[in-house]
Every structure is written in structure tokens, then in C-alpha cells.
Length: 167
Image 1 (cartoon, rainbow, N blue to C red):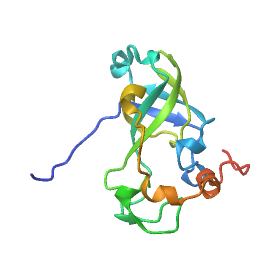
Image 2 (cartoon, rainbow, N blue to C red):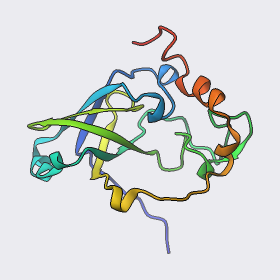
Image 3 (tube, rainbow, N blue to C red):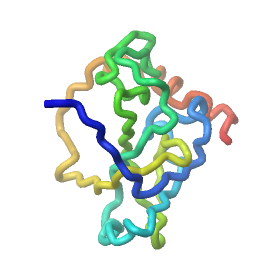
């Protein structure tokens, strides 16, 4: 196998209240009330057929403002160096983000959603429906994340967002 360049074309753009990474919650769980919208490019509008039947969707997007990729990072929730693939840190070899959001409504080529930690203007690569039958896993191992207590996760997870520093 040889390495080759892979190119993606955005299908739309994500709009949110998050304009500064340092003031954006680090995971959607800490941004449940944050609403946003997705502007789907007209040439992809037909692909929205039947999406309104789903309550939640996976958003796959390009982390266009992520730091230079690193293979070892100190994740937001701990001060311990971890391998990038054992974290959800955005400075990844391929800057691809994945979030599950609540789909509120669709108006033409505009999707309204809630529960996002995505920066405003992020290019959207794909949308897939969240389906409990296929996406829910009963029993999981959570690696080092189980070492982080709820209070620490909450404090670090919201960063500056709930301290009156919202944009």
C-alpha cells in the first residue's frame, strides 16, 4: 500500500455561536443547550430527503482551525500525556471532527441543531443519521476517561464558556 492524497469537498458549512476555540466547550456533552445551523450547498439538497425523520445525526467535519498535528498530547481533561488516538483532542493527523447533535428541524437547505462544540464556519464533510439500533453499545470500556471524576470533567469541559465569556 502506498500513501496517497485524499481530497474532500464540503457539502456545507456549520454555523454556531462558537467563534473562539479557547471559549468553546470541549465536548458536546458540555454544550447541550448550544444551538446552531448547517447550510447545505444547493447541489447536495436532494440528499436531505427523509433526514427529518431522525432526532439525532452524526456530523463529520473538517477541523480547519486545529493546531498542527501531534502524536502525543495532553488532553483537556487530564495533565497526562496520551497518544492522540486515545484522545478526542483536535490536533490530529487528519483533522476530522465527529459530533452527534440533536436535529431540531430542516428548512430547505438549512438544518437547525442543538448540542454542539463545533466552531463557526467549519466545513461539513458528511451527515449520517444516528440510529439507536446500530449506534448504541450496551457495555463499553472507556480507557483513561474513567479516571477523570465528574467534577473535574465539568470544570475543564466547559472552559470559559459559562463564566460570562460567551461571544
